[in-house]
Amino acid sequence: MIIISSCIHYHMTKNNEFGMLFKKLKREASQAKLILSDREEILEIIKIFFDAGKTKNLAPLAAIQLNDTRFSSYSDVPPFDLKDYATTIALQELRFVSISDYEYEIINPRIDLFENSVVVTFQLRQTGMIVDNYSFRGQHISMLSRATFVLIKSTKWKIVHVHLSKISD
Image (cartoon, rainbow, N blue to C red; front, side):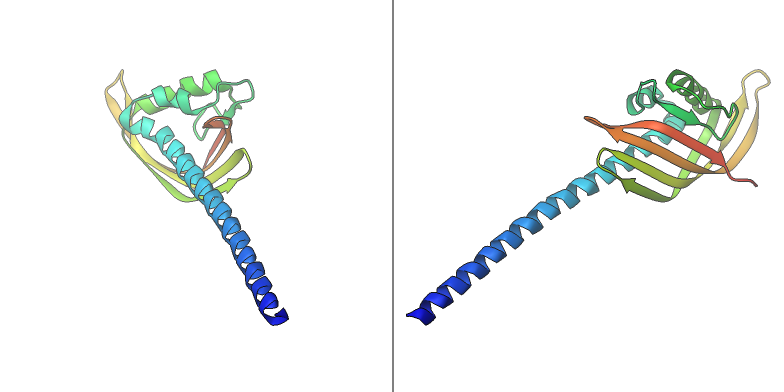
């Protein structure tokens, strides 16, 4: 009788441990899925940012960046000073409408995800033709830059800081 009781207790304990382990794995899998979907969403936001240069649809630039006094940016083209949200949006729009045949490549993105913030770093290759509307002449550009994007999440991920710096030729 003691042997049977011990066996039942052993199996119940093992099954309970298995159940707890299963719940833990299920919880970790859902967190991993959440992190994966966050990573995918974050990369998509970065692509939306640069796709504005290809599509000339500039509306998403304002939608994916945080309109807040804490927003800041540095650019890889003049002016090089620290800019606020309104200045950044205006200069980004000017930049993207001034470049035809724009192409970009995000190289080796690294995504460091924290609780409600993320730092995305990568190299950025950009090519295109800068068109001078007054003389109707163009100048081909090809530029490799370092890029850092900082995003925060409240209800959706939003860019709160952009830093682009050209890598010397």
